[in-house]
Length: 82
Picture 1 (cartoon, one colour):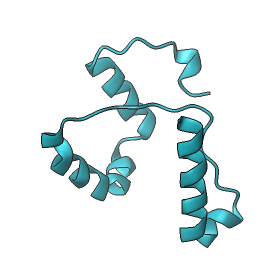
Picture 2: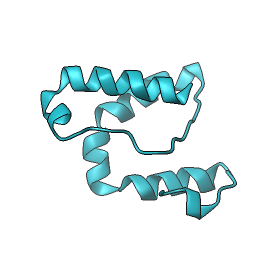
Picture 3: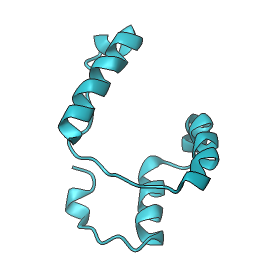
């Protein structure tokens, strides 16, 4: 499922942004999946709208680690960053 999702979204992104197609856009090797409840959709939309600004203050790696720890997800660091 993830392979098909990555394949179709890569194609979609490359048709929307020619600049990304020219630099060889590709997804990372691994993936992570999180779920939210329907009541949290407005919060998620708000987060996504300001994500670029948010990540100027707090990096993706730091945020991911805090989510993993907050929700008690077991992980092996050697698989986290590839």
